[in-house]
Structures are given as C-alpha cells and as structure tokens.
Length: 329
Ligand code: SAM
Ligand code: SF4
Image 1 (tube, helix red, strand yellow):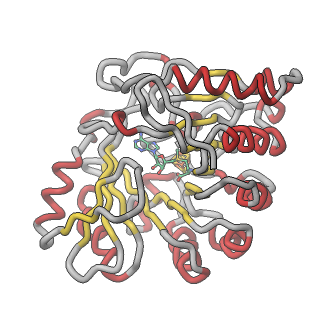
Image 2 (cartoon, protein in one colour):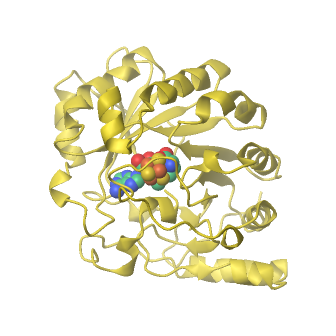
C-alpha cells in the first residue's frame, strides 16, 4: 500500500469524503433553509465514472479510506452500484456512508452485498413529532426501521449522528445515550456549527455541557481502542453494548490531526470543511487531463491544506454561506 501523502503540517492525509449529490430529501434546520438551496444542474455533477477515476487516483497517492456522503447519497440513482465499484477498487481499506437513513431500509441488504460495512445515520431525536419539526418530514419510523435492518444484515459499526441544539433536542441527550445500552450503536453527539449566517448561535450547546449531562447518568469509561483516527472522543456507559462519541468541531477543534479531503458533488476538492477555497477537478477531468496531471493538482491542494479552521472569526466569509449539504458533510 502506498504511504499516505503529507500536507504542509506533516499530517497524513488518508481519508476522502465524497459527496455524490447535493440533493436531499430532508430540510434539517441546522443544514438547509426551509425552502432548500438551488440544485446543481445534472451536467454539473460528477458522473460515476469521474468519481471512480478520482477514487483510483486518490488510492494511487495513498488515500485508502472513503466515505460516501451528500446531500443525501441514497437519493442518487445507482448509488448502490457506485458503492460496489468503490468497494472493489484495489487499495480501499475502509468504505463508509453517511445517510439520513430515510431510504436505508429497502436498500441496506443490497448495500451490504455491495461491500458496505460501516454506516453513519443522522438521527437527532427519538420523538417522531420532533423529527418532523427538525427535518420537515414525518420519517422517524422509516429511519428507525432502516437502522434495525442495518443491524440485522450485519453492518458494523452503525453510528448515529445527533446534532445537539439547545431548546430543540437537548432534552433527549440521556435518551439518545441510553440507546447504547440496548443496541451496539455508537451514538455521537455533534456540536452544532452555525454554517449559515441566519442560524441562531444561541442554539449552541458545547460538548463539555453534553458530557456533564452524560456523567450524571453513571460513570463514563473512556474508550481508546476504536481503531479510529476520527475527531470523536469515545466513552461507554456501564454494561452498554454501544459507545458514545463526542464531536466538538467548535469548542475543541481537531484540525491538528485532520486527515481528510472532501470532494463536492460538482467535483471541487476542499481540503478543509471551512475552507474558502476549492480546487476544481471537474474541468481538468473533462478536458482530457492525464492521471499524472490530476495527481499533481490533488497533491498541490493537499500541500496547501490550511493548518486549522477559524470558524469563529470567519463567520461572514464565503465558506459559511454554503450549507453542509453542498459541501458534503
Ligand atoms: N444527508 C446525510 C446525513 O444527513 O447524514 C449526509 C450529509 S449531512 C450534510 C452529514 C452530516 O452533517 C450529518 O450528520 C449532519 O447532522 C451534519 N450537519 C449538517 N449541518 C450541520 C451543522 N450545522 N452542524 C453540525 N453538523 C451538521
Ligand atoms: Fe439533513 Fe443531511 Fe439533508 Fe443536510 S444533507 S438536510 S443534514 S439530511
């Protein structure tokens, strides 16, 4: 296996998050305005063969972990076949997907058969009415059924992502954490990031505040052997089958160990979630660039990966006006 490339700060970059669509069947309050955002034109979105070429080139330079995301990846036609093609790319050591889970139930067996083993499902509440208020869709039961089905077919780990918002779902921190007692799920509490200028920062609840609440439930054992170099800190409640993850992009950012690259649905390479600059890969891809030329562009972007984000100071910059659905969360 090729050694992963290093950026200008000696971080090894071995992880690629691929947004395969900017479209989504939900309108989560923390991610999109209620009216949605303008969709990319069909021709502007990378075709599957272009995505697969990027994956092969990424593997050639030493990237071995891929996460497929969006928008909502499962709304794109042929997503299962794409998963199969990525899974079969020699050199991929880990393939995962982040989904809102709404379309998961009917597709999860095919996803498993295609080689997907790891999945993250966004679920911010266990109350159907609140689910509707947060996402704009009466879909809680479908997501829950998708999760149970994912567990049944053998996906592992199954991670639940909950964005914690004061006054919205902070009353459910304990209930969400308690899921880990009965199910082998990883429940991850994510700090709300105010991507949009209109988003109310008063909704923010720090992960330290979340941890205080969790500690009141019982002793939390730190877990270090998760074979993950991701940004979460992990804990376990006594006797729990699953684990609790705490992700603090705002209060304790994890830039020092960031190993990621992102490709947006239109084929822009982003080296930081909060970057104000992106590198266009689609134009060279569609104008006959050789593999060597594309690799040079990718390596150059990696070399210029920013040292850290400064979300607090840059709230008005261009990057913040792009929701996660457009960047590829
Ligand atoms: N649609 C899929 C889903 O919801 O899982 C994948 C894309 S979504 C943009 C990826 C992740 O970004 C989700 O787990 C979501 O909770 C998270 N996210 C979106 N906006 C966020 C925000 N403002 N703050 C924190 N997390 C956010
Ligand atoms: Fe919600 Fe994900 Fe869709 Fe954003 S992209 S609105 S987080 S489901």
